[in-house]
Image (tube, rainbow, N blue to C red; front, side, top):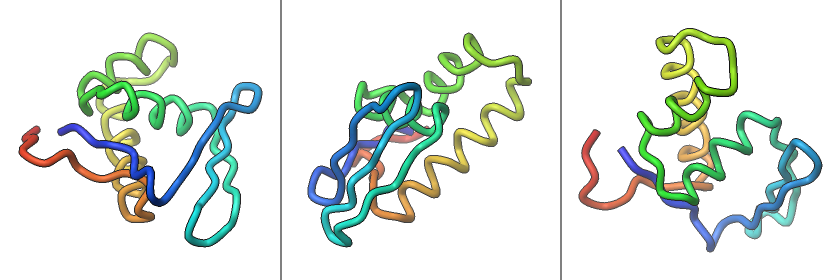
Length: 92
């Protein structure tokens, strides 16, 4: 499945190894850890869930199963907050 960033809801930028998200509706900032920021960058680059997992496995010492589970959970959390949304017509 592919996701897209919701530009009507957030702006984001890198700050050191982490990221900062500005929620336009709530007028508040949220700091993202390095992994969440890399996931958000991958979403912006149009990576699928599986491609995000492959990219993160190259950087972190974690099992593929755990990585897939945690990336999927992060995507669901960001989607629940309205920061990203599933691309229409995309199937995993």
